[in-house]
Image (cartoon, rainbow, N blue to C red; front, side):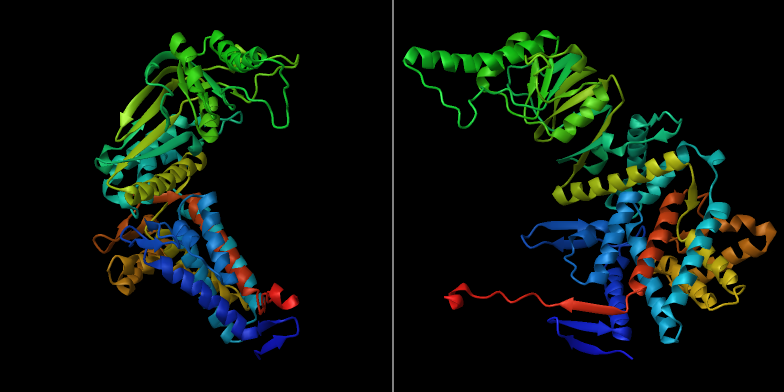
Length: 547
């Protein structure tokens, strides 16, 4: 029996059925917001924040991050999509939809007097069996792994995004960028640090005129127009301090007896910076990048030596440049003897550093770095909204390519995995002779929400398409000669079931496995709650009443 009582701790308490219903309703509300944006023909959302900034996107994690959600259970789903985004980079919408559907079906079981503990153990069993089945039966093996599969995985990720119409062009671009920064770690494993791919945005021109630069692009310009705009065989110094006139620290007082002494002090202040610049330039450095400023009076020393000086660089950019060029980010010139020096080993090397004009901005390109290859993508688009959404799409595609290269395991997309698991878990449920049978059957039923939602968003008859898809997967699991039907998924543009392995609709295995695990854990977390105690904020007393 549910009760609604006021507590003596100045708050309210909702228990039993009411608490669970509220939690499920909150989860459903979150799911309904992102549901229509799932799939290659999903719709976009326009979000306007409290200061009027507009974001247009169909990325589940971005939508939920921008929502100011207050309900504690709904917050769990918002955090769930963020976790999927950090771990995999894609599949943020589907993980929320599955979690909400699991909760909805669990509530139905609770209404039939099945205890939540039985449902939770059934869900855990179903999730474990589902992951095992995907890994053993639905994986496209590494022996078939090639460049084409990488491009297809990137295309599948992009199909639901704004750049879906140019997926062929952008998939090539992102695969080339990922392969440019790919390296092999000491254990012999392939690694793709996608942070090493710098994505810059510039308005103007069409999306297809976006370019990939074999090197690192820096959104800065040279400090003076008299400096060279192009340097070959660059020796790069990365500094994390300012090259400005040295000023006395706060609280330091200098008492001078004459104006001449004061002039000498000012001259010495200037000379300290000049000596520092000389020490750096004497090592052969011809490109100096600093996070701080460079005084106008100090620029002439660089110009005289024909060196390029760039000020106000982002520290995150410099850290990536040091990795790519083999440089060291120098925080101070002080050495162990208490004097100042700059070592040649701190310099990085690159074939060419050049300043080029893109749109209204000047960018500095560091091409052919010595230590590790780098890549930069300069995105072009009609306006800020389009460029921002393109950047999110490129990030998702790069994350997917990273997962494919590192794990070398793919599964068919288009609802194939969810439908295959639904059939398998239904058959498994009928072999379980305990209460968990009902929970496993509901888990199987919940997974069908993905193909159903994909079909509804594509304006197709979802009941008809999902029934056909289930028939294909049932044949694949029961008839040995129709084993290859396990790759059949939805073709949403033509409204029919096709072999998605042949059609190149593939996703990384890790994306499906993680989304199943995360969705199950989130549903279980919310399902365990049967008591909600909400404390009221303490009333703020008016100081005038105290007087």
